[in-house]
Image 1: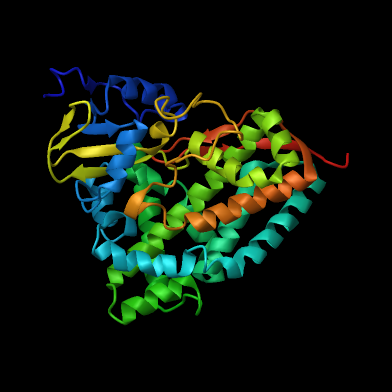
Image 2: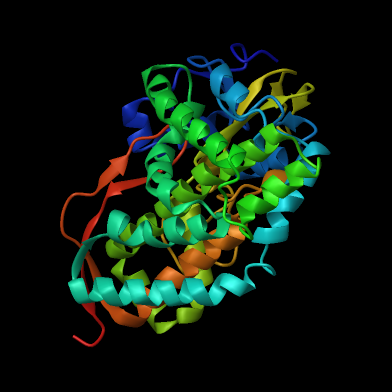
Length: 398
């Protein structure tokens, strides 16, 4: 079944500024085409329905990450040793290094620190009354907690954050946006390599664990540097975007904020619903290792690059009732914002701890959240979030 004769082709461009600002109508149009759609502008297939996305994420043997997750050969070569760009069995050993330090059991030791920092941050911001929910709120825990956990030297921390911002643009299709991100990405890789080679990582941190594994020969030097780089990029952008998006959603849906304040046990559902509705990572791509026939007869050829649409799957009306509604009463469900399967986000336990701590602390103190200006979105090929989100809060005691 060819894409053209079956009507599965679309000239939708998911990577224009307009599309990146509001991709959800385009995702729906592509879901309505079929279980997969062929995007003629970029010579890629798109999976956007929940069932097919979950199946692809579960089947790394057929939908392989080993040829990279980006949409251009430059980033796929540069990230060849990143955790997300290798499949088992190589992936298994590398991932164990992450889960040994960043899994739920091992994060118990930092949970109190995260809660304390979140409470101090909430006190400071509620006293101020007005603040930017991106730079003043969302940046705080991901930047400071992750920097400490990995063990980056103090003198490189601000540089790494600046370099990491926008790096996911390098995963997009060849073009001006992708090319513009390369200088920052190159500078970040140079800095990380220098820190690694000079042994400047703080002893006892997650970074030194990776370095020591490389020194023992368990992983290569390039793999160690790739893992460090991958965690710099992923840990900052995704959690920052999730926290800021949560503030925006609660400000836009005050009834749901009231519900969280009255039922603090809903904080886990709140985090899931934020991730579902405003997926910080919108999609990555994979390459088929065989001809794949989907349940409705759509056939994706072997060797095809396929966008796996997390964000589209998370709003699939075939799976979620009223998928565009922000609803803390939604039953616990299988949102795919953290991925799924062997390549599910290795740092999601830490991200959840940070998101939970922030909204739990805010809900204890703040009665209302109000937008005071026009939010400014970041325009990025892979991530979704805000560059600016001015808000005013009124304390529960006011």
